[in-house]
Length: 211
Image (cartoon, rainbow, N blue to C red; front, side, top):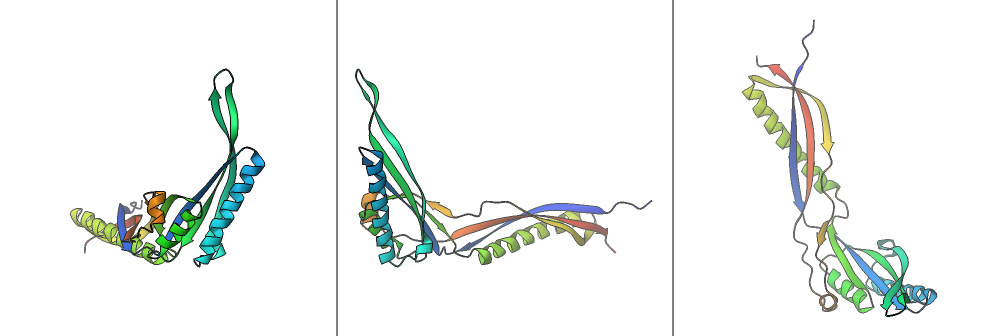
């Protein structure tokens, strides 16, 4: 009867850092009017004005995305009447990708001055493949070092790799705090700094007796 192969299973993790080269900005538009049609029209005009400002700053059309146009009733309480509709609020969000991170504050300031609200910023990478590969390599080296230690403690050595599984991990864009309208209008500088990407791998090695 053949003895089953002995194995060791190790999970390794690693990170890699790089300077972000992509800033994704959410620009909100909100307009209140007495009827639904007027609210929609006002929100559409505001979004168009903001898009025009973005294009003036060199943002190409593929980097400007409208995530939706919504409308809700503005309900107020009136004594003796209960809840009544005082008007309608139409809103939409423009997701804007800015590839010149150091110069992005002027673009954001222009969009806010045109009537938008900054609803959040995220730093990330236009092409994360290279930094992700570095994170995977660091995770592999971490797993390999641990597996070698376990093999040594067991009086064995590592054999061939049986399987490698990459585990899901947080490697998305880095959220930044929301900016106030006045701060954005004054073109507060945005420092990219360093952002990290993480990777986790599970590796199974065969164990063999040392010769």
